[in-house]
Length: 266
Picture 1 (cartoon, rainbow, N blue to C red):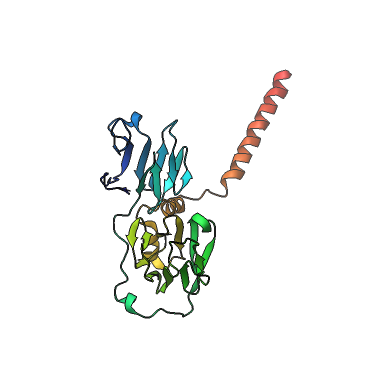
Picture 2 (cartoon, one colour):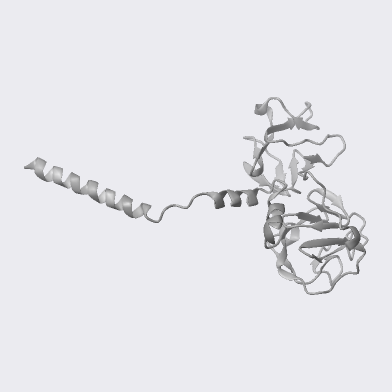
């Protein structure tokens, strides 16, 4: 967990429960507490991912600008606000660099409509943009993802397919973008990665699994939903004969009770 200001140190989140609360009387600094009862929030880490639990009566807790009163599951790149202090959940490894691919000319070739950017925050929350063609992010009128902010660049970035991955190509913006909580300019995005423009316009990359390697990447970095899906997939299926046998047993018991009542009354 990385804080937005330099007054706080990073908090490594190992498996277990981490109680977070004020370290001083003024409440200006947050950190790990030995007493879980004094915590404002708790970060619970297990094999499924990272869960945020809000203490009873605590207020002013937000995830990506939305208030959380009890519990929320976090994904890498989410911004958590506690008492006005901003922190971001970052991955164990930084986003992949595009390397030599960045020097190749932008491609206008047909992409894949199954690869999408799904809005999870900001103006485009709930909307999706397919990458069947490159997408321009910026303030200009021809931008696919248009962000109408005077301080935002006319041509901020371009997203296009790079093999099985997505290339985020910076077009000379002043502030760059956030990928999984890390400030970047150019990066290779993979399924499950979260990219943020202008602080609060959030998108998640979604794509069909392309073999075992792609599925493993989609489930790594504490990506809870993918882990939960795997857990359910390994559970044994209920036998289709279980329900009929229960009905037969219930009918047999009912029959015995009827006989006992019939002969007992005689």
